[in-house]
Amino acid sequence: MIAAASAVIEAGPDGAPRYLSLRSAPPLLLRPTPDALYLVGGAGGPVGGDDVRLRLALGPKARLTVRSAAATVARPGPEPTEWSRFSVTADLGAGAALAWLVEPGVASAGCRHHVDVEIRIVAGCTLIWRDELVLGRHGERPGSWSTSLRADLDGRALLRQRLDVGPHAPGWDGPAIVGNARAVGSVLMVQPDVGVGLSLGPHQRSDLGRLSVMPLAGPGVLVSALASTAGGLRQILERHAGGHRT
Image 1: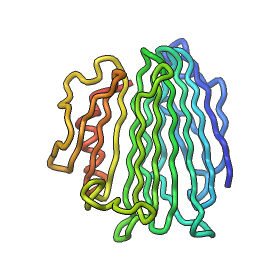
Image 2: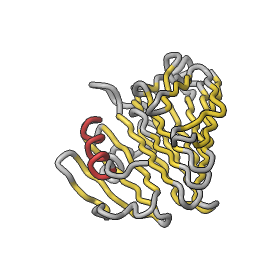
Image 3: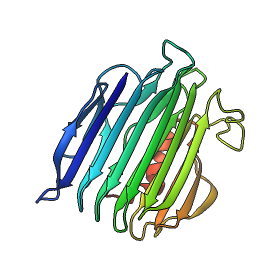
Image 4: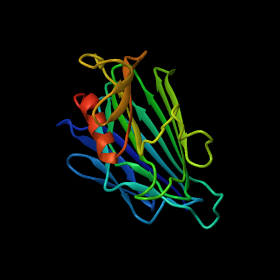
């Protein structure tokens, strides 16, 4: 299945987002609510061979929170070697604010799924981008999952990050990558004074898992975490990044 959805947003007079354009494309349905734009699955999947794209464009001072109605469970397709793909492109105008707070992805056994994210912002924008992945459903080994994130600030590279887990990535479950963790995630934060109040540094531990809090030249901060459960991962990320909002 090939589909392209998009949303173009400007700042409303009351600060709420005003949708200049809102285009759904099954299996990706966009549903605006008073508090967020929700991504709703209009069909099962993604499965191997699917190619779904989402474009977000925020005008100056526009504010948007994106959430999803449920986790995204990637499954194998009819051809077991085919990959599914989800691509997101986000462009933020001056003073815009975007919070991407969707539910986790789940790499079910046998899947081959790639997530590609490209974000372009300018100085003065606020960005919260949360990414969470659960490594397999209960009692199963995960399939192959690849995530690529590229974020640019004023046309210059702010962050380049890639994660590969599953059978296609030798050594992914070694101690240098995820080890025995069942959930992995990160939060990218870009806003003025974003590092204030955070304990910066790699190789930190909490009662729920491991994390690192790394400053970026932006200003920006990347919080990355590993945990044994999806709930534990969310708690770590909320604890160390939840105080910063759009």
